[in-house]
Image (cartoon, rainbow, N blue to C red):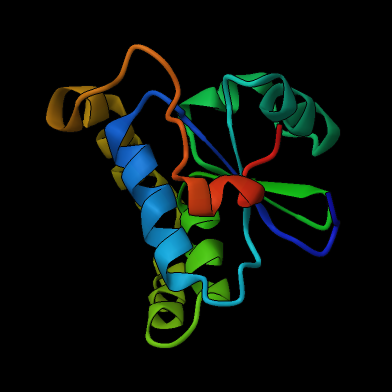
Length: 134
């Protein structure tokens, strides 16, 4: 795994989180991002190595150059890496973080009820497998 590739750690049983991963993959034409479920051994190890507290398993985590971002910052930094027009979403960084994260946490608390969840982590499509860390 390369330090040059940003890594998204996500809740592998959450349908919303899996949808976010699919969204990123479909728009990441240069295949920069790598992915791992938070529940996996790789995900747990990367949380520790990046200095992100283990209770961050309620969040999407973006790891860039070994440093982790969580919650709204992780999502916005992901958007910044994606091509035009998605990088425009990074403009929401001007919204104060307490407000952004409050909205993020509200969605996170309700994600299973609104979007559902699986009994086990997703199995990526064959054409996406090389982008998932194991």
